[in-house]
Length: 205
Image 1 (tube, rainbow, N blue to C red):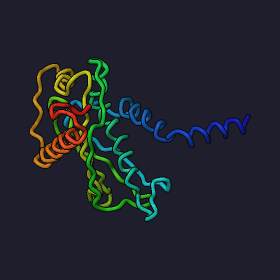
Image 2 (cartoon, rainbow, N blue to C red):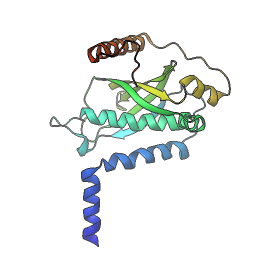
Image 3 (cartoon, rainbow, N blue to C red):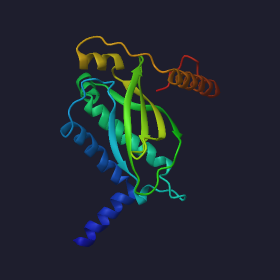
């Protein structure tokens, strides 16, 4: 029986990203049950992290993929805590990561603690825009910075925010660098559509 259980565990972690699949729902449950609800969707939230041996690359720094994973966990916890996940269920919508951009400014090393600070910058007719900062607690240095575009399907960002506040709420003006990033993404999409023989009015899914 023990061998069967060990074999099943090895298969689970070998064939699936089991550790991520376990951590993600735990992060959402933790945000919902152990932390107070954020009443302001624009309020920043901090998520703690620690660099483990499994996070390291050949240079003994946290590898690039781990930044994206930790940001994903922090982002899901943030969306659960500020009520956007609940609004999605109520309105029958869904979210998908449509674009992300990462800057790495200083490496995180083995057993170094960090905090992922997530905040919603604003939204347009189709998507939410978030910023996520990896901060070192020892000196407050921003080790990495991510921008994320979360596409809303089956609803709209404005309707989700309206559902939370029970009134119409306008998005704050997006920072200049985010507007440039949006313009870059749109220009890239138009180029890819042209290369694929699609019309310029074809939208990314």
